[in-house]
Image (cartoon, rainbow, N blue to C red; front, side, top):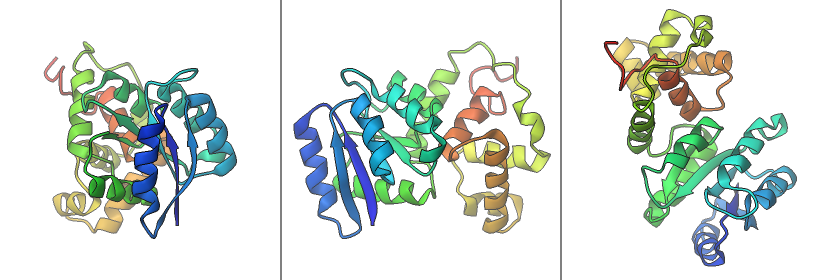
Length: 222
């Protein structure tokens, strides 16, 4: 059973998501929060598998709530999915940087929302990879050049190569095909890169790829 915590300051929105998720045999809504402060407290006490987190809320917004959850080692297994009205929302990028595993637009089709919760609970893939990469690229381009960092020095050449392919949106199967290795080997390289960089999941690995300059959408050739 996948436990889900719903976080939104609009009761009607929470009620809609609650009814949708609770109707599934493998999903359970373990709690609801109306603001970020309550979300952090309930996440610590309930330990849900997935938190569906709104961004704009009173008292504490979803970005800071996400940061606090991601910073707590005891909550390392909790996955936060940001709920947003617009797919290119500048706040979503900040949320990904601070530990969110991905995001969903609020008008996502019900079946897609249900599947997304299952996917992120498994930790198998980045949610909405095409839109997420576009979002990251959009805001990465606004920086003149990547931040100075030697964080990638810990990675092997193959791990850097795999990290770039993750940032390009490839699955482990696709990475394996590209590099002529098994999906299990590709997964191992991804996992090692995540461990060395302290990345919570593939979403964070994509952010690191852009911010370190491994992938350069806006400043290529400088």
